[in-house]
Image (cartoon, rainbow, N blue to C red; front, side, top):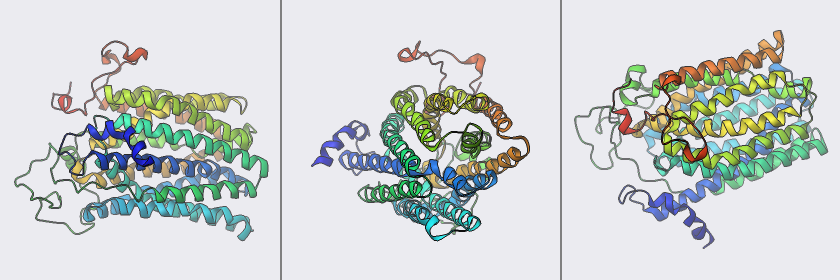
Length: 484
């Protein structure tokens, strides 16, 4: 009964589907959205009990800056490089939920052995090697889960209210993540290494198990009809229930025969805007991850910050993220994803430049307060844009290709950043990262048709925010017009 009462809060989303758009009906959809929100909230708590403290755990165990960079690079590489075969598997089987549950199970169970490592492995090198192996296994689980989860969320949500829904979902998730990060920081500060880390990682494991349980009631909508992208011609109609393939409903390629899902020419034909977005995302991700593993090292060794203050700083990010999520979600639905990405991306691009000049660890809290607002808008719009530029019938594979490029950048950049830090220090790497972010963002704006001199005000100041916007070229009424 309580679930039905809570599900009423999701009825406006479910009811906005046209009659017949989902044969399962709005009631089942509302319940699925409710459980999806609960899963996201528990998963965020599980992640933030532990993920922000893995680099500090490694440093306390004796890891070098290069080791910490590998802790970031290895799971990113596995999590993204292996998504294509698992995305193709999801398409072949026609079901996304089982793969999502399987991959998520691996991700959540990794925290238990990680919590016990210091009691079973006493040699420093062996402990760091085991830590690298466990983070790699976690990356493998993410490779299984992410394409399936992304496709399932696209099936459960509609673009007319997707930004508002994920804004609300992220608001709840970040609220719980804030509490988890702060609690974990106090535990680690109070109990030290290794007991404090063991408690934090153990809490991540327990909450992660709860997140697996709430996945089970989520209903997976019936397989999408094999309607191709509007940009892809088709010569024959698919019978009801037929599997969607590029050649038509009667032919199925063997698994892995089109492992790379075509090339730029096919991407431009099947998914307009996908190729340009993927390239700009690759460059942006490389710039963002260049100093990614160096922030905790710089915070600990150069600024002499404590784990407790690190937890507060991460909590500051979640606080402003919570405050901005709903407003960013409404803005995404109103003006589109690309304008939001550009204006919030400017704030995200300036963050490492501030890191490079701060004199004390207390300033990290202020930086993260500003960063939380910027990243809330950017991440929400970037995820929604992936769903908009990928075709319905092949979304898992396209998401896997997109994440492969992003994953290569996210894996190689921290290693390069670690090598550069050994040579020139952490501050120059952060400054370089900020400049590269601004360059990648300018390229994305250029490819999106949003020239700085041509940005116009739509309907005055939107709700008093004063955000200059331009039509989103992913919308059907805009995409059909010639590009200026």
